Image 1 (cartoon, protein in one colour):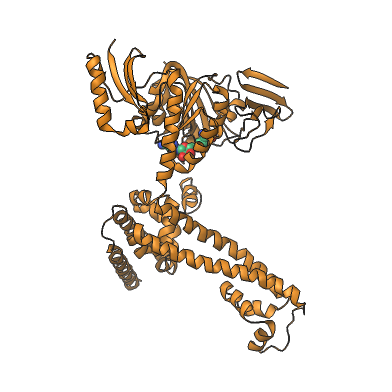
Image 2 (tube, chains in turn orange, yellow; image 1 turned 45 degrees about the vertical axis):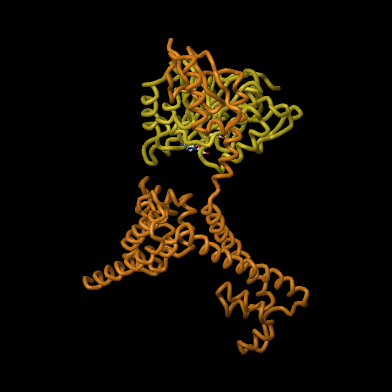
Length: 318
Length: 220
Ligand SMILES: C[S@@+](CC[C@H](N)C(=O)[O-])C[C@H]1O[C@@H](n2cnc3c(N)ncnc32)[C@H](O)[C@@H]1O
């Protein structure tokens, strides 16, 4: 039976027929990372066991006495891996998701305040439909001022006592804080993306760029993704339904929030989405491989010109 | 009434059906949101959150695992199933828990700090050559990985299993093909596996897990 020399995370071993003929144990994980140290020790063992052959892929036989060592080394290694795995893009992805959370939280809260405030002054709710503007209005002007502005002599809302009004204002104030928080998160993302994905950010805008990274899980994955997949990011459920023979094929996923796409006519959306996804794929690749950080603006210009030409051509035909 | 069906594994017959329990390695402590019984000496094995739990409920005749066994677990996630295997193999056993997402690995690290028979490994099970220096030969191989090439991954890792020992793979049909008929997928998986191992048992895991099939195999 041949003798083999194997080196693993706990030491260097001469193994014969699953039995350990000789060994040098490492003192700690660093020994296994030190190529020079390993080479020296291997040579030392090979001198003693000249028949042994060095192998790389060899399954270490099971020996009870080493299980504890395996445990310790793996736990230590795993802890280090956890610490090292956190990158800037993980922070950006959390910020991006936080914006989504805040948006989701604000919407029902504003509706609540509208309903609540309407008991007191329905005229304000009727006049200002925009959520942010409504909150700003009721926090900056009292009922008398609001009515005067609208040239209404008396409100059809109830004349509740100040204590009952104040509790509505208190909630509205918290909503305004959340709205402000959203803006500072957007600014944070913008700044952070300068370092990790400047081109994607220039092309798509920081928010959509961050959302694309968050949806894929990493810039690396996004950079490796074909543009057709990027086009459908966020529309997976509709896509799978379509593949099962139900519903229509979606034309795009979250990229639809891009203004040029959002405002396009339905019949052009698919074509524009395809071109946009192509540009995004290129920008993500340049960013991931740390290429020219200013090429994103060119991609954007090129994409916009492309779309303008496309629309013109279409207009001429129809 | 608890009946010990094999060392560390108990079954209780209730009106709603069979309930499985493992002997708690750390009496009184829970790992996920499972129930405890017997003053914390037993942990209930979730049928919905663990594919081995589901397999037991679907009539898996025997879990090929004993006290002191060494296990290679691929796709360990946050350690739900791993924790029950950790109960069964006990202090003298060891579970090499491979997981490639560091979000999940973090939870495994905290689990391993308490249960000293779980060795967490951050690695891609597609590349056993990366973690071969961190593991040894094992008595049981388990895989629960939702990837297109999951069967290929399992076959690649068979080398760690001792001859004559058993392994299990939870196959998720939707990861192999979103649209194809699940029965056809399992037929194909069966053929792929049979080339390398002997299939001892297999069962679809519904209603506990949708579109999953668990295979028990033996290495020749
Ligand atoms: C369905 S979960 C496993 C749940 C777990 N078995 C349980 O019952 O507690 C699948 C896990 O496999 C991991 N995974 C997927 N592909 C992997 C790969 N190639 N290598 C290692 N882990 C992988 C995923 O990160 C995920 O945590």
